[in-house]
Length: 284
Ligand code: BGC
Image (cartoon, rainbow, N blue to C red; front, side, top):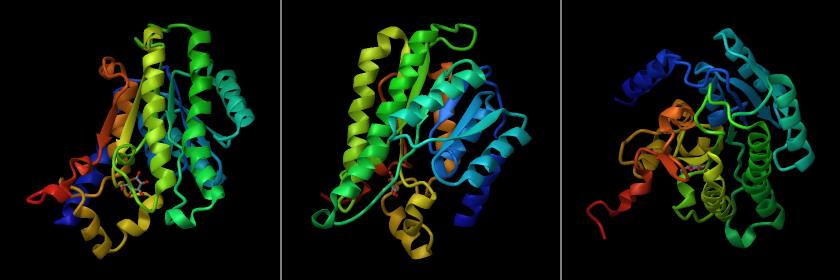
């Protein structure tokens, strides 16, 4: 049963057709050489955007994403920068503007976990997660907004002045013991995103989040790689499948396109119903 579902998902991802919703737009995707970021970069390119594949470690994997995009007729460059470092983020935006003219879409995807029981959590692990997951989104969003305001409208490509998509998590609302630094970072992303949306909506900058649930990526491999682990994980997912990265790619492209022009300041959960608190089924 699971393998059939898997096959169907795979087939769906392979035959997703390009429809050029993002033609002539440029998109920076942070943390785009693996997992969700990689799928988002591919989906953006499939819909016609020039893509900057940002990464911090793994030059080869980043080049592979660029090559795959080129193979399907798209345009991409790889750019190495640590999103938590102000000078590197500023340089990445400068390089993007020098190469493609401007930035239309930012996907704040780079993120990581450093899990531990709270009483054992080091300040270093607390700080590291907050630096990448939250400060990284601050630095990139600030440069994107500066560029949108500098450049002005491009009505030939989009109704909005620019779009920002923050990669959040179901853990912006679901508390997560053993992962307090991560949950705090995603809770922070939620109110950063909403406050930015409130502040810049009047300038036609459209800002939203995607809140993935359990998606098969390296970040949570132990949670799905054995049948036992997967069965346990599925208890948390009413729709009864673990997500694929292409599920997130599809949502992100739609959020970046004018099809979702009236969606502003909200989180779209892509989680098979994880935020429905399935533990309450016939309970409570
Ligand atoms: C985390 C994953 C986890 C998922 C559901 C994500 O934000 O990065 O490790 O499996 O949330 O709990």
